[in-house]
Image 1: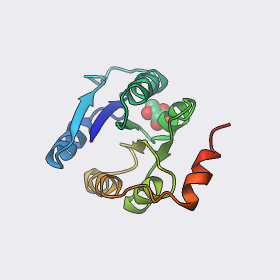
Image 2: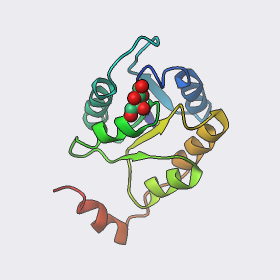
Image 3: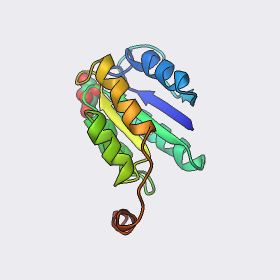
Image 4: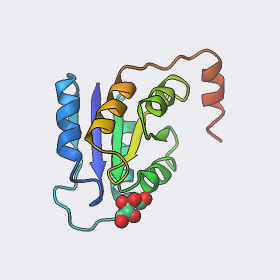
Length: 142
Ligand code: RB5
């Protein structure tokens, strides 16, 4: 899987660990920044990442800010992006299985490295179930 990843200043510290975790699982990761913890605006990075995910068929995105909330709100403004704010392995699994989410959001100030790893495992090991969920997902777009 090709992943794009972006954060704001409140999510940048955990980013190298997340990239390493994904690479250890065999995924390709493209880092869209930022590269230091200077203050930035999370919507700028959310929008940059969503354009890449939409332009690269089959890719997925990971957005990290302090809480994950601002990133998910921003990402979900894009038609075709289904960004899910996940707090644990269960929400990550359900975001993939039932919602066919293509962008994972979480908060560096909310989850530690252990929980982040379980979120990534849950996300990466779960496929969309389709079936009855497909018609519901199709209704998300208005
Ligand atoms: C930055 O202080 C913080 O507001 C941001 O990272 C995010 O949590 C917003 O939703």
